[in-house]
Image 1 (cartoon, rainbow, N blue to C red):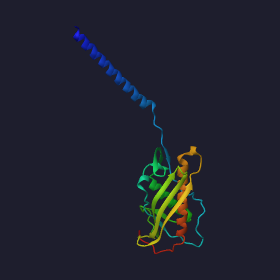
Image 2: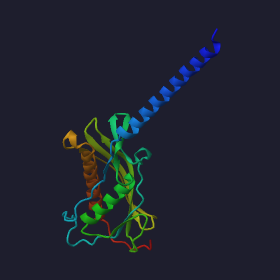
Image 3: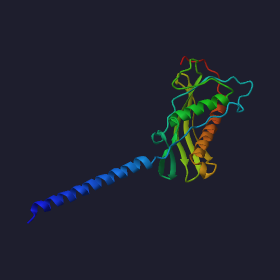
Image 4: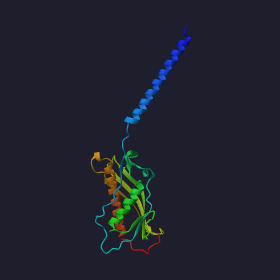
Length: 224
């Protein structure tokens, strides 16, 4: 009996199988790293009204100085991925379509810039207060819903807002409002049309609040 030779042959066969398996795995991994390039992400921002937009301020009205408090948004929207509603109770996160800044920061920036434009270049600052000028009123936004409902092809925005004095000791206006906008454009434009429709929905909110600001009396300025 050639026991030693048989054992050696079996060991060599097992070794060859292991080497072959390791080479196959290495080849697969190299294929993934070299040939499987990941899809590049697209980045979007919300856009404010252009500076040459017609103001809503009557010539005889003096506009108070404004502050925009910290905007609150739902936790599930507070992420870099763009979020869409694909069914009544289902959302989708797009890994390859993202916001170029935090969604909360984008809402704050656009709302502040829209107010400044609509109110004829009024001084509007946003929290945290970096500008030194005093504020007559502070506007607080709580975004309850900001839904890109692709299954309905529309944007839905629901906001509760409050306008207070500079020290936030008195509320002059407290309201909850809703807005809808169609998501326009061709499907090929994808998430760009969603960002555009969201920007226009914020414009609707900005116009309504700017109109209310023009009706507010001037107050003794706070020291915020």
